[in-house]
Length: 289
Image 1 (cartoon, rainbow, N blue to C red):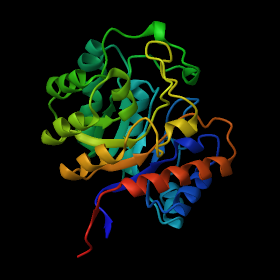
Image 2: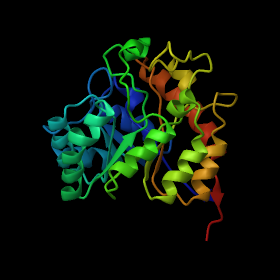
Image 3: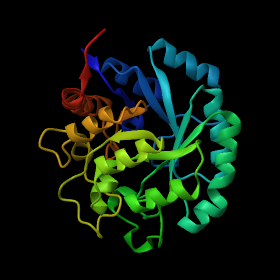
Image 4: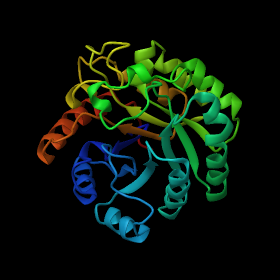
């Protein structure tokens, strides 16, 4: 028996630690694919356009790991253009970011040049469904609720609108379950809608603290251990994971959390190990041929 889904992990929880350490720890947990991050502070910024792609690939090879994506939140459009080219040099086929401007500006001016660049480099863009709270250095404290944009890509209706307004095979969605939970939308319904249209490019295995206060807590989804999937957590991850398997999804299904700032390496690894054990118990399996 083997998992029917492509189970991967984010280096994000190790944002205070070197990339080599993060990859070593994740490989030790059994992951063979990891998502690299090139995002603004205080998110993970382990790699960037000034780095040597060959050296990064050699480091990953030493650990028996390959990159499944490149995440670049909080970057300008020009910085994203550089990172799309950088992703291609790393052999990465998917880049991830969220709606970085009020929706009309996002689809009219911000996104089209990025989609064109992605097509040239053979890379796909996965836009995360994300609450319309602007990213800031103190986002984990819940700041920013009063600065919400009028429109973004957070609800299922807005996800539908984006993939309709820009109907391009190089543009899809990175589905973030906690954001859907906050707005009261069905994760499985979003999976099915996107899978039917071949626009589900990336999926986070990510939870949220049940004590989250809508309209108050912004992007503060709770401490790291309450963002990690767990028995008795907010989301029953076996349900969306089963939906992903049924629709034939083949993209990354990636273990993620924020909320680990200042944690020592061992604490991060132990928390991820516990979450990993639970997630693997939820993964649908197929008979080995």
